[in-house]
Length: 132
Image (cartoon, rainbow, N blue to C red; front, side, top):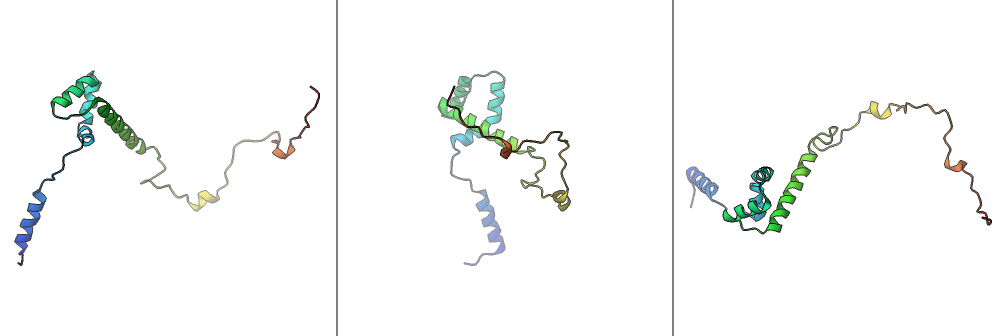
């Protein structure tokens, strides 16, 4: 059977219109409504009220599971937020390569030593005394 360009186009559209058969996991369901859940908690709703509401809506989840998922999502959000802008000298996750003038430039410490710093070899080792 030879397919025409129109047949191929119709097949592509048909395949793209297919819906996946898989259901969302509980973590994905809670993740999809994480923002509104946190806003509700900010307005003063208790965890028990949120859990009851979720169960009424058909999301059957236990209290420890809900709290664990919420904690994991909060940690994940915090990690994502801390990565952005935390290292201004990095661009696209890569370290900036110093130029040759920066490598060979002498670095001044800005301090003037008035007394010599004792070196480890200048310390005297004293013998332990038997008398106390």
